[in-house]
Amino acid sequence: MSRKIAPNSLDFCADQSVTVPINGSGNGMDIAVINEAIKACLSEIHSRLNEATRIAKRKSTRARERRRRREGLDGYRAADL
Image (cartoon, rainbow, N blue to C red; front, side, top):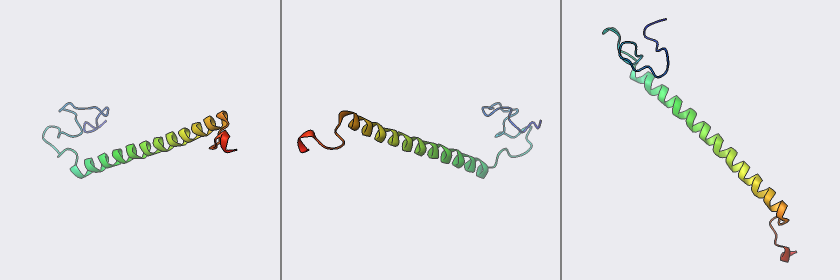
């Protein structure tokens, strides 16, 4: 295995880090690569949060509809009928 590849994603030791040059050779990770990786991670987080919000709204709407049916309201008051 290359010494420039971190054994895990939380590798912070300076002698084998993916972001710190090893033995003065190389420049570590390019800032553009780091920025793109961060953008990709944030985009994925945003996408998952949007999906979770959509699911929660749908469940809330369905629960409200079930509650109305159970109470026999269906959006109308008994006095209106």
